[in-house]
Length: 396
Image (cartoon, rainbow, N blue to C red; front, side, top):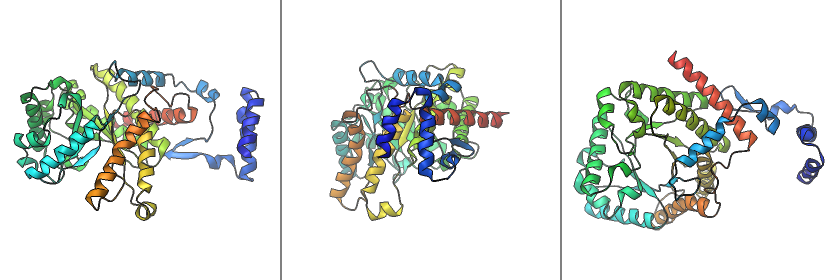
């Protein structure tokens, strides 16, 4: 009844009185509670109201978001739709036994033939020192590396392991005759793998290459202070460039783990992307920020009681990442993979979440579906300004 009345009132009222009418109706439903209670502190000391109109947009200059939209278009090739992201399903390798390598290779090829544009290979159980060319041969047999995004998630003890693994992969691609400048994907690793002072200058300089394969990972934190999380990433970028060369920016990927806070994930990714664009422009590099996002698997009571709860979580988190402007997306399987049949089903569903959002929800047909959402644009603007202020304090 409330929705029907509100829709009728909206059509009858003049544009400048819509919010006033909405406030009157909302006050009735609050039953005396102050309207300010509906304000949401989505990051430390950053609040948004529950309702915005175009009037607020006029009072806040958010014209830069149009540039952000155009940047999303610029990332795509001429034959793709306005919004594109690499669907990189998650595949685990458990050992370097030939049978296991061949089994994983079969799964990779099946995934690529079923609509994915790449894969994220989990090598956390593999000792990197033992991984050489023969294992790449078995693992990536008949995989066209120039035409799909291949990423690796690893556990490393030091930067030398990362350097060697990256070098071996690029050398393997060269030997197989693939165009190195077309390689995409990268290497993901825990933030704890890096010392407090980050990578050494010699390592950073050695990792710079003409390929867009990205062995350097900067992962954004998921703490309550979202503005500080973004500022920390900007500070890391500055340190890396100062230690090496601005060319290294094309070899960095930014990893974002989605959360259940739908609008915060969107605003965080958009604010991060915009501020990184500014930094890249200041450094005058001919490349754009590259964001690889991943869904999370809940361990709350609902998830433990009903494993399909994570399927819903995967879908909403994946959508928020896409609307935020991700360049690559890995949806984690939603089930506890107890049996081989359960594993295959869970992996298929995880892969298809991204495909269905593209082929059935058509979220790739619009460059910026969030454009015109005054609420989300206000969140992005507030978060961007707060993050930039914190970053300025860090460097001064």
